[in-house]
Length: 484
Image (cartoon, rainbow, N blue to C red; front, side, top):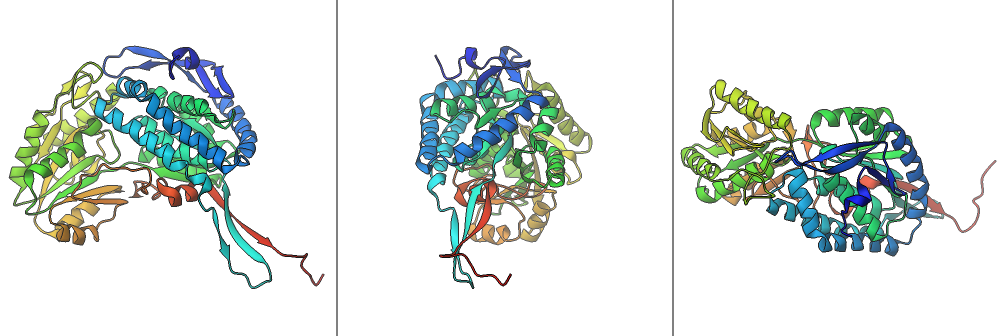
């Protein structure tokens, strides 16, 4: 039996093993529309049942010795190695990933598990000074039940980066993947942890629509909500969590700038810009959405970027060697095209692309762009690279910051100049001499402004802060004397 044999998961939900769901939804290949299987869909009532069971199972899991929890995480990492080819195939067919992106995502998932295997034995508190004759401690304890709501674009990694640390730190998890990628973003995670020896009831897989999303936020047993997705949905989740006095960790959208400084190597800069804008069809929160190029290099850079865009083949990554696969669905594909055509109608020039190809979109370059055009100020989530010039460092900083988002910025060129610019930029991440897309399991990840609530993922400090609560604990050698 393979890890993802559909006899195990078809039309089923996971919690105490796999059980039949009351509803199902076809798993559709975006490149062809072919049906790949049927995933089980949860109801709000099933979320209620799962949350109660998770709260019960969580106490025993939190009491499990640290090395036993660590062993489950290590085994999960090994399973991602052993079943890499099978998981990659699902990422290619269900999520529309090109093969290299799928391989990278599985490798990052493996690294996430190995990194999180160190969390159970990481220091979980500190010794405090006290005015009284006692020991005083601040210790971190599991939050309890954590809801993880994950998106379609990097479905495996962006679910696992919350699931793995939450489990490692002794929490139970309700996982709601995007229904469009419920296998690679849900079934894979459930099967890996099932095979790794996670006790029943600790992890629940609950794919579904918005009503299921509301239920995993509002279930009274849930203390932390970890959401990755669009800013509008993140605002709604943040409001609901605030009303219910729950913590919400929100990793949201981005409209990330790549700044090309005077004197930069144009060929290398255009290569970096193309990778940043076109990787996974631009469907990444860190995608390079704005190319800001010094006026001395603007014409040369635009020509080089357009040449690269025209050379990138678009097609079905499961059957062809292509650079760009399908956009996730027809609605998003038409939205991308509408942003491009709307910007051209407003005066932008199409230097490359601007064309729907089957289920995909050609790598696109737009010039003569103004800041009020949709291609510049909106998060496109498609393979579109708007290019604009600047003359001074002050102007570059102003244009970069004149954006509702603040997730990632890349700066290419002289390091000293880049450092001075970096100090003026409001962004969760700044990469000098790299493009805007980058992630490592041990590095803090998050954004500012409309990009979210800061770095709530990555590394021991961020993960412990995200998925535990602080408890003050004091100890005296004898019962204290009181005046009453």
